[in-house]
Image (cartoon, rainbow, N blue to C red; front, side, top):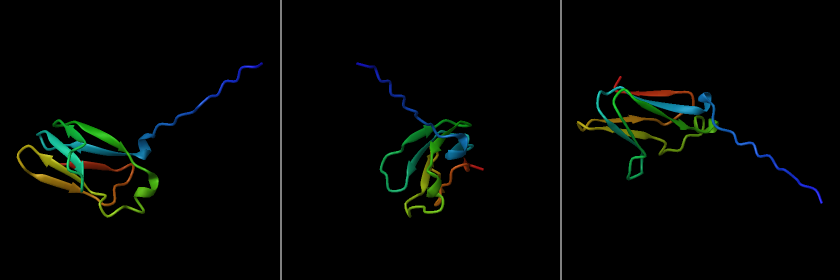
Length: 93
């Protein structure tokens, strides 16, 4: 009887496979996908985050592929489509 070891390689997205969101509004924002009722992120002023985005999403963007950011003061910002990896959405600039 032998022992078999299986190795699994998990890959994580590289920086080139991510879409970046930078909050440059000076106030806290919430970010959500168009068509979604609830935000998926809250970003503090001068902070940011990244999303893993498939490469083909840029060339075959779904119609609802839009991000919406709401600032505390009530201003709304929109981005997309398309949402491409390697790009940065600088909210407020």
